Image (cartoon, rainbow, N blue to C red; front, side):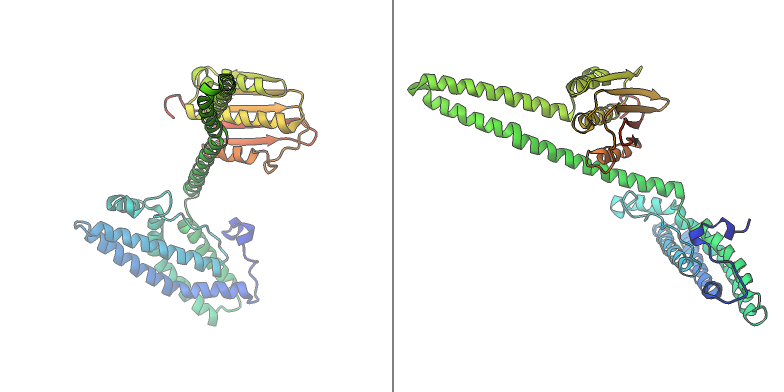
Length: 394
C-alpha cells in the first residue's frame, strides 16, 4: 500500500497522469519551495536550539530556548498551511501552549518555561526542520532536473516525492490525536460545568426571589398590620395572625422544595435507593425502583445520578403518557449505570425541548454517557453511564 492509498478520500489527490494538471503544478511548486523553506527552518532551529543549550547554564538560557520552541510552533503552522494549500493535506492545528487549559505566563515564569520545554508539538517541529534540509535538497534537485530531462514522467515522480512530504507532515506536524482530543473535551466540559453552575445559581436566586422571599415580605407586612390592630380590633388581628401562620407554613414548604432541588437530605442520609424511591412516589405514574449497589459512590456522582433520574421522571409525568415506568441502578466495574424506561408514546429526542440535551451535557462533563432510545410509539429507554468514584474521593 502506498502513502497515497492510506490518505483519507478528502485528502487524496487524483491519480497522477502524463498531463500536467493543476494538482501536478501545485506539487511541483511545493517541491521547488522545499529547499528555501527547509533551509530557513533549519537555520532557525539550529540557531535557537544551539544558543539555548549553550546559554542553559545562565538565567536567560532556558527562557530563550522556550521562546525558540514557541517560534518553532509558528514554523509548524506555516508548514501545515503550505501542505494544505499545495498538497491538499488538512491537519488540525494543535492546542495553543499558552491557551485556555494550558500554562499561562501569569502562572509564573517557571511554569511557563517548564510547559514550553516539555511541549511535544514544538519538539516534533524541531525534528521536522532538522530532517527537512537534506530532503529539501533532494526534492529541489530532482524536480528542477526533471523539468528539463524527465518532464514526460515528472508528474509521477512529483507524486512519489510529495507522498513522502505528506507522510512527514502527517507524522511530525499533526497534533497528538488522543491528547489533543482529551484537552478539547476537558476545555469543553469545563465550560459546561461553569455554565451549569451559573444556571443553577440563577434558578435558585429566581426561586428565592419569586417564591419564599416574596411570601416572607408579605408575611412581615401582614404581621405589622396585625400588630397595629391588636389593641383596636383583637378579633381582626387574630384572623390576620392565623393567616400569617398559614403563610409561614407555605413559605417553609417552598424552602423545603428549594432545598430538595439543591441537594435533598434523604440522599445525603440514606443514599440513592431511598432518594430515588422518594422521587418515584411523587411521579404521576407507578414507578418500580431497583438499586443494586453494595456501596455508595462519591457524593458528586451520586448527586448527578439523583438529579438525572429526577428530571427523567418529570419528563415521564409531563410528556410520555405512560402507564408505568421503571428505574434501575447498578454498577459494572468502574461505571455506574442508571436506566429509566417507560411504556409511553415515545418519540423523545435530544433536541425536543424536554431537557435531554442538558442532561447529556452534564453527564459528558464528568466523562459520562447519555443514550436515548425512544422510537415512535414507545417504549422509551434512557441509559445514563457515570464513572464510579469511591466515596470520599470526589
